[in-house]
Every structure is written in C-alpha cells, then in structure tokens.
Image (cartoon, rainbow over all chains, first blue to last red):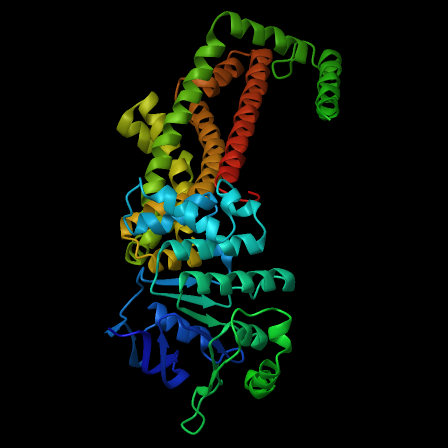
Length: 255
Length: 249
C-alpha cells in the first residue's frame, strides 16, 4: 500500500532543443492538494502535461502509483483553462459529462445516476439540459470539472482552471473546489500564476523558475502551507502565516 | 421590408414592358414581360414547365448527392491521414480547376445524351468544394477537443464518431449549400450546351424557335427556382449550425 499517487522521478523536459524543465524530483500523495506557481514560460504547464501523459519527459519518468506513465489515462483527469474549447458545443451539459462515462464503458443504465450526482456536486443540477453556449464561463468550467469528477480519477490535474474567470467567480469556484477536495478526498495538482490562489488552495506550493541552470534548477522552492482548514476568503488571507508565505514566495513569480 | 425589396424589380419589369412595347415591336429578341407571363402560363398548362423543372432539379439533386458523398469520403480521408493528403495533393489540385463544362465532351462519349451524362458532370462539379471543405474541416477540429479525446483514451472509432464527426457537421452544411448553387448552375449549363432535357434545353429551344417571350419566361423561372433553393439551403445550414452549438455561421 503506497499513498504516493504521482512521483516525478528526476523529470527533465526539452521542447524544441530548449530545456524547459531541469531534473525535478517531486511526489504527490493521496488526498494532497499541490499547487505549482512560477512565471510565464517556467514549464509549470509542461510539468502538468507530463503527468497527464501528453508530454514525454526527455529524462527521467513520471510514475503513477509506481508505474511509469507512457500516455494519457482515464485514471488521470485534466481540467483545461479554456473550458469553452474543452466542452463539446453540440452536447448538453449532461451529455458532456456522459462523454467520460461512455469512454469508460459505463453501462447506459448507470450513467444518469452518476451524471446527476456529479452535476449536483458542482451545483449544476438544474442546468443539465442546457448547452455550453447557454452558460456563463464559471458554469462552463464547472461542467468540465464535473466531467473530470465523473472519471473518478486517481488525480485531477488542473491547468490554471480559473485564470480566465472574473475575480468574483474565481473566488466562488476556489471555495467550491476546496469543499469538493475535502468531501471527495480528491488528489489535485493545480497550476496557477496567482500566488494567493496557490496559498489559499494548496497543502503544498511548488515554485518553479524559468531558464534553469545546473546551479539554479527549475525547482526553486517547495513550501508546506500549514494554514487551518476549511479556509476562508477573508480570515485565511489575513492570517499572519498566509502573509508571511506570500512575502516569501513573491519574488519567485519574476518580481 | 419584403414589399420594399420587391419595389425595384417591379419598377424594372415595368420599364422593360414599356421599352419592349415601344421599340421592340415584332422583335425576335425582345418580348414584353406581359407576353412572357402568357408564355409562362402556356408552359404550365401544357405540362412542359413541370416536366423540365423536375428533370433539372432531380438531376441536380442526384448529382449533388453523388458528388457530395464522394467529396465527403475523400475529404475525410485526406483530412484524417497526412500521408493520404500528401499522396492526393497533386491530383486534387490538377483536377479541381478543370471547368465542369469542359467535361461535357468526355461525358457525352462515355454516357451519350441523357440523365447519366448530366449527372456525371454535376457530380464532378460538386465533388471538389465538398472535398476541399471537408478536408479543411477535419484538419481544423478544435485541437483541445482532440486532447480531451486523448485524455479519455477514446478509440479512433470513438474519436471520429463522438468528436470529429459532430465537429465538422456545421461546415459540411456550408459546403452543401455551396454545392446546391453549383449543382443547379451546372445542370442548366449542361442542358444549354448539350443535353436535350430540362429547363436549360427548354430555354434554348424557345430561343431557336424565335419565341423570345417563352425564352424570357424560362429565364425568369430559372432565376426564381434558384433563389428559392438557395434560400432553403441557407436556412438549413443556419439551423444545423445552431443545433450543433455554433453561435453564428
């Protein structure tokens, strides 16, 4: 019995002859919420895509529950930032969620109950018959999260999922995601360029730097976030520890 | 709105009526619209209007069906497989610019006069836009959706049936609408140039038998038929685009 879900085993990635990520060692444990921050072009999305099996590392390997990842798997769910492009516009909300169940060969008789359940979980129970174009951005992203939940994955990889949303919607979705993670015991790896978001959501925060060298590798910092759960948009963000960590990590974002 | 858009054609027809009555008395080339209406009524009552229209539209529709199916299959193949696209590129680019009417002599040699000759030319003309637009549609399916397909480990069959197929439907109907217009134009052209059937031939016969009123009647009728069919095709295309979740098409 191992509780390590993802293990980045000295993973290095080159794209087009340029080193994006220098050898990086990292583990994500079951039930953990790990946030990855860094300036644009530091390879944080590439790291996530390697965990999804979209990108093959040039050195080392990413292991999921001990086995090297060789390609995408339904056990790993990926939430894209551009929810508008990641949903099937010709399918209703229900049918978009159903796609994950159809892919997993879930019998048709079992699908409605599972679709209802995940739509209720993300607060879209009343919108199952609508098409994505009839929903707001925040609701569309909820549909994508629901589709990923329907996969019942080992780990959910989220690539700046709230980056395109307005501030109000973003905070609402952050709280919903935090609640989901607590209730469903999800394991999440979450890429963001928003330091406060990373500290607010994460159990741990990983800071990456761009243009890594042997002296200054990609992994710039790995910080535990010992803030109490459940977190709160006001009190957590005023917590002295939150402010201290924010100050400590601030310069890793290219400031 | 509707009435306003009719005002200009009405004015034009009125002017033509006056001009034809004053200068074109007994002309072999010009007839007043009122005479064309009488000739049109004659074509309705003797059944020639229905027969010729049915032939032209039926041939255009069947030719479009054959050409569009061929274009759909080939375009999908060339869109899915880069190797097929490389192999087929030159053949497509050489065959595509051939004017469809240039095929009439060959089609006559192979099929003689009649339905099959006209069908083959219409199908040829409709094949290319369908092929090119289908290929482009398949190649331009939202890359993010293909990543979703990968993330969900869809089989190639599932990926085609659930993602690529539905994603290209709106653009197929754009291609089909273009095909409808092409099919009608080519069918009438073939009838004027060679095939002794349909609306194009009826118009030619009217001209050769020095009946300008009947010729004008056919000309106007072909215009009306083309207009109605294109409006219908456009409405269908928009409806499909909406059903497939597109904002505008």
